[in-house]
Image (cartoon, rainbow, N blue to C red):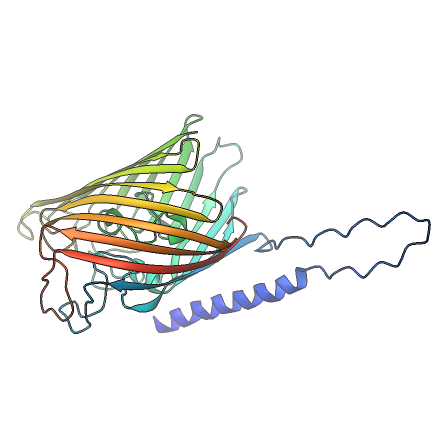
Length: 405
């Protein structure tokens, strides 16, 4: 695994060096100063401004970002507590607290299908550690394709009326948020993102426009966050996206076996998001998730069904070209503790301020409150959880580049 990781990092470093050399080679030299015109000659036209960088190498577009932060947890959990680490509980990607931390460094290579395309996301940092950790139905992360968030090829036949087929590793279509913080309204991810849905899948997915406003799709994948899995069963994913000028409605349904070493017992997930984009600077979304997992039947299991569900709502106000504010509230119910490890009702409220310094560099300052019906949170050197609340304050810096900012 170490040799593979080193080889991937060497490849990314080599790619970055190559990009730098190529960018230097492609940047046009400044024009030489024009000679003074004759006394009665018309003035020479002004020199054209230098061309903007293309951020591409051959047919591949390049983009990427670096995302770092400092988070303060008012409970001040210690590495000597029962947690065994200084973390913000229920968080993803920005879960380290009371320290500076790299959430993610990412480099993307993309070629839109014409009719063949390819997409690769290299990712490093805490995000890589979490999305490529051992899945729930395995004790090892062997074969999880570390340092790769996505890697898939695409086929879009020119006469197939918009039909597209992708194969490889790709992020899930479920949820209102994505792995990349810069593409979300808030900096931290919601309870639903962390607990209710998968990160990614490995397999095949299709999409097909069926009208001017709706696109449907079907995916056949190896389950939740699996390249390979111990039970050999596959998961089916049904998707629908209904897009209008002022609203987008997404629906996802996932079903398949997710228990270890057996195909007995199914996991179901229904996910839907309504995004509202009325005229003006304020947008909003509503997100709902309901999931259930059935244990294996006897003699290996009790056949019990565990469920979880939650709802979230968020507002985003683009105050001006430089500043934006966002607020999110949500509720998550885990009655058996199947997803969080503790039977509890969770509430969460988040307020985020964003300031864009220049194109490609932004700062976010975020306050968040998590509350539980149980004593779930650790404080300082607690040997066991003693708190029903957790408050955090986070400052993040994100620098990004690419054809689309």
